[in-house]
Length: 314
Image (cartoon, rainbow, N blue to C red):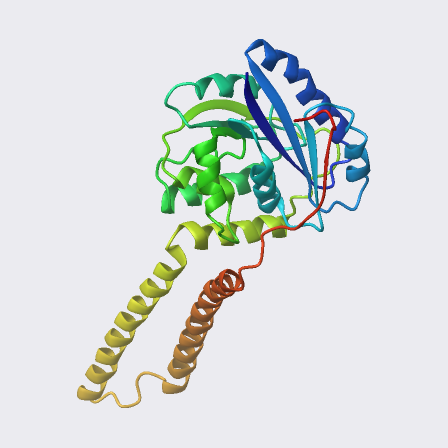
């Protein structure tokens, strides 16, 4: 019987934990009928609510593992921690808020039985608010346009893959990244199933606006050359404009228009424009330097405080 490990990152999810685990446990019988054994790995990512205490109450369930991180490292490091301890032939990733229907895991596993190593549940639509849908469309659109042309239009963070994919991801110790574009970047030809992301029923998402902005910046820098290209294009454009303006000044001088144009206004505008461009360029270069610093430090992406599992689990 093949084992499937399902990784669930948990952060500030006390209102969803019981229903999430219940849904996954209900899948165990159905997976057994398909000749699969289910292992559930819940990664508690430094929640300040009752998430961890509620998780520990589920330790009576066989084949459940709870990893407690020392603090909130973020969703991506939490998933990386779960992947390190996953023992299944196939590994799935799903959120704890049940916006992604767990029953789709039953559709993913059989698709991995052939030559396929990656199955993606891509969003064809979202049953969410307009602003949230717009931000998501913008984020995944950036990846598709500037990094990976074949990336699913609606993006994904719900998928299943085999041990080879997991091994490759575990070997990449990259910081400030997004694991889902990284999985796609590996180049394994995926099979895609489509679904509608459901509206969150219980609790409030901890995925704040500023976390989304930070992830967007990390992804743009990590998977595209767009920021550096912006600097290069801006520098070339400014040089061309400066050359044209210089020709214009020279022409005015040759024609005897010594008082035209107004020098003070022109100089101030030029200084402000160039100063803003320089500061903007330094900001982008600073983002790259910060990431280089993180890589040089080589600190772990996460630190595990406790590992809890049912004593009957193997």
